[in-house]
Amino acid sequence: DGGITQSPKYLFRKEGQNVTLSCEQNLNHDAMYWYRQDPGQGLRLIYYSQIVNDFQKGDIAEGYSVSREKKESFPLTVTSAQKNPTAFYLCASSIALGTSAYEQYFGPGTRLTVT
Amino acid sequence: GESVGLHLPTLSVQEGDNSIINCAYSNSASDYFIWYKQESGKGPQFIIDIRSNMDKRQGQRVTVLLNKTVKHLSLQIAATQPGDSAVYFCAEATGGFKTIFGAGTRLFVKA
Image 1 (cartoon, rainbow over the protein chains, first blue to last red):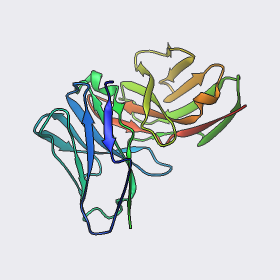
Image 2 (cartoon, chains in turn red, cyan):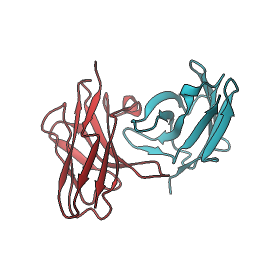
Image 3 (cartoon, one colour):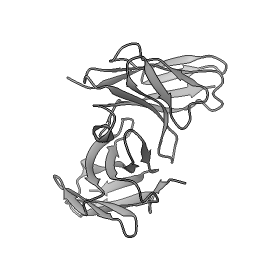
Image 4 (cartoon, each protein chain N blue to C red):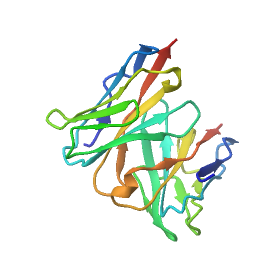
């Protein structure tokens, strides 16, 4: 089955620790995205990548880092600098930027809890 | 600034009735609008989209209406079923990747 996988589904960390969230897609999509979702709010863009070895900051990139070494993979690291890391994190992909990018395919999400 | 909002945070409908979920947007330059459905604990799923040069678009049991005069978007679901229970997001996009999501409306379907 083609799609996007995120792992793990639930993640618990102690404050001050960095943590990396996995995102893999086998849809052959060029563009990939990371969003953060908080209760009662819409999705907010953290980072996006148009192509391998290239990525751009979104609206709330502070305290996060990404890499795009392979087309299929776009891991997100939540660093200790992120002040409120507890949230639901969603990874998405799309065919390419431009109008085709509007239809984004989302993974199942990772719920991160930092205590 | 740019914002996409929803008129109602929750909507409760009887099974078999039609549902209407509303959304307001503020960026008149947005050229593409999308509705997503998010079930509990899952990622959003694309439902239907509409370009700014259209007023209406129909899919299977869903219709999206766009009123650019008042910057209003709506999603109509015909013959609502229990499986339609979810959070529905509207989103607007302008030029490429930039998609702004609303806060969402939770739809409850009563059997």
